[in-house]
Amino acid sequence: MTAKMPTMPEAPTNSRPPPPAKARTESRTAATTCALKLEPREVKALPPRLIVTAVEGWGKTTLGANAPDPFIMMAPDETGYDTLLQHELVPQVPADISDTWQNTLDWLDSLARDPQERKTLVLDAIGGYERQCHEAVCAEHFDGDWGDKGFMAYHKGYDLAAGEWRKLLSRLDVLHNKGLIIVLLAHTRIKPFKNPVGPDYDRYVCDVHDKTWGPTHKWADAVFFGTFFTSMANEKQAERTGKGKAIGGTRRVLYTERRATWDAKNRFGMPESIDLLGGPSASWQEIWQHIKKKG
Image (cartoon, rainbow, N blue to C red):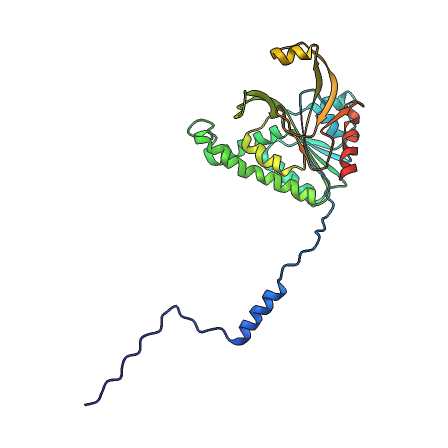
């Protein structure tokens, strides 16, 4: 009787033979060549990305018109530049109204292909462009329904619009990397602030939705807040009672750091406030000297 040979167990289906010695050597070599080298970082000098929020009549459009070789893109209903130009209060520069969201994106793409010797892009004002963005999202995703079953349903429209808005910021970055100064002008509104560590108070905020403002604020190198300086006739009484008689209000001032009552920031080591004494047409130069000195 012939004895049966024992059956050998099958090799696991997921087993692999070890790599040949040459492959192991090449892997070690690759790891060696990719070793981390800590060296001082060198950066490319780029122009600033600025947001200027200010109260009405402060001179936002005039500031933008006096920037170096600007192209002013105006949102619908933003006719401030035309009025100023008609009364010869601003220089005559290339400017036009972009009436749809797609047109806005197309213009930015066109400018990136051929800046036409422009050194500054001014968007006047971002609230109008946000409205374009919302209209495009509402038409595409909600069949034009702005109600509770459409754009406003669980605020889904704002969430979708936040992603769409980033298309504009990415195009602005392309222009920024090509050497253009980017200036976004913005209106303000007063919004109650719920203070978790004390009494609530009102503060100036950019007149756009929070989901628009969040990524835009992070994107910018500087956010400025412009207003008119106002003092109280009896400051001690005002501090004690919370009421007082306001005086002044004609001196224009720019704030560059965040405070409880407004939003601002800068990455240029600028003073916390700048008195603008030369009038609206001189604002750009007065601000620029602080950016250039620290930039």
